Amino acid sequence: MRPMNFTFRTVPQVIFETGAASRLGEIAKTHMQRPVIVTDKGIVKAGLIDEALKSLENEGLDYHLVDGIEADPPARIVKLSVEIARKHKADGVIGFGGGSSMDTAKIIAVLLNSSQKLEEIYGIGNIKGARSPLILLPTTAGTGSEVTDIAIVTSDDDHKIGVLGDEMFADVALLDPALTFGLPRHVTAATGVDAMVHAIEAYTTRWKKNPVSDALAREALTLLSSSIVEACDNPSNEEARGKMLLGSMLAGQAFTNAPCAAVHAMAYPLGALFHIPHGVSNSLMLEPVLKFNASEAAAHYAELGDFIGANATGGFSARADAFIDKLMEIVAATGVERKLSNVGVSHNDLPRLAEDAIKVERLMRNNPREVRYDDALAMYTAVL
Image (cartoon, rainbow, N blue to C red; front, side):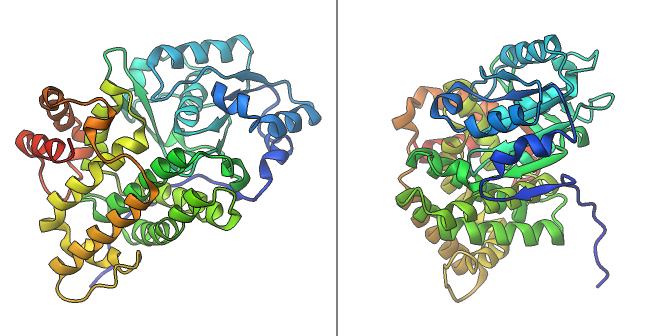
């Protein structure tokens, strides 16, 4: 059998080093002199960014702090952040935080010296011109945004929209496990499950699945599944935190090249309409989607079971069931929310959620099994 044809893309440089945030100035000065550093007020209040800022000062970089980023970044906040960066006459961008801060940083870098409006770059391949230098530092182990080519924005009409293009890849992904030591349990759990979903969906996607993304997805799931409970129970465990951050990055590289599917498509309306954190939304929809897909993805689920300790025997169907059971056992041990009714969703909301989910064609088309409106409604109902 001939090897398949495929293309694999990722960031040009990854630095994985405990304490690396304290060297940010040294790393950044080769790319920029007047950066904006994009984060949120919680990161600033917690002091997570202090060493990084001191490092920028020590290297003589004239930075400006943009700390108004919100979860599921609204278009108005993104536009405002771009204007702030322009007023600073920034020559580079540093994203420091979770997925929302890093996604906003990507868009600022693209629009900083562009005449395009935000709405003009929505979708795939609509960015024109070169972006400004970009460095990304994740403070959660989940989104993988530091190595992806996508940013998610909540549009003015409350829909989560992607901006995709090679221009979104950062120059440097700087991963410092120490930045995740203080993460609360609920954030560790939700972002960790999000990363596991990235790995699973990359491994089972209908399009662009390839040997490199498969290898990354398997290793990511191995690291994440074996460390997420320990990271939740003992948040300062450096080994567990390191495995989570590395697993998240590998999963990000996997799904960038072998895209996500129905779990994410069904999570998006929950974030847009109810402002449920992205990781929680994925956790809520994981089990019903896995069970829905099992008839088509049994062989792949059976293979993944070996990497999370399912230790099952028999045919693909039995091993796939064992994979789902073991995975949900791990998820349950983290304590992450698994019922829609506990996060403000009522039975009356489900039709709107199902309608919006099936419109996310960019993701739904990748799912191993076609999802129709009635299917989506039934899956939401299953976890109400």
